[in-house]
Length: 279
Image (cartoon, rainbow, N blue to C red; front, side, top):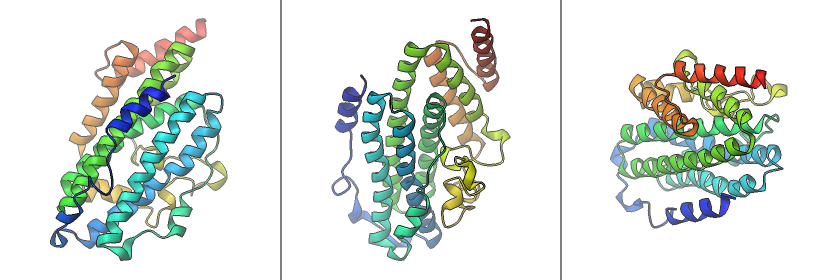
């Protein structure tokens, strides 16, 4: 069981919203309305950890270890939403999300294969870590720069925890897990070929609600994410390269292979498919 160890390790580095955020260093001259709006959108997006947790608990009912870990992941993700809202409450109260705006991103996700979902969220944590690091550099106000830096570090640790469960799955179900992880890895490391940012909050998850079945389609400004990435924080090709390299590096360690490119990973995925077909 991984939960006790993960709980202890994450507990040791957990930050306190009252004592670890330098609230007294706020500089109103360095916060624009445009910047504050993006903080609001990220606060609402982070709130979607609520329906994601409900999905994880439903689809992993047979795995008490992983479901127990969700108590930690859910707490920390909701704290991300809370600290961003607290920032707005203190310094830009007219943009604090309403309860109705938060409720709108809580909707049911269709059941999905647990292994693929695990890999999807592992890649999502890597991507979010880089998005928030980039956002920290873009912002000019010192308190929000520190907040984004801290929550980006949380996302990296969450990715590491998901990786531990992926390693456990390889031991327990072998090629079934390898196939799922390689397939989603190819998808999530190929973001340059897609029109929209590849992140779990930007993927369709409820067929009955299509096309309004992504988290991003249900925030007050459904187009904000692309604008935030492309025109504001400027998450360019160099940043995207870092995301892809981190995904490939971790999968290289996971599979004890060397993946320099997405094509390398795709070839490995095909090898697994052939092996499973023969078996």
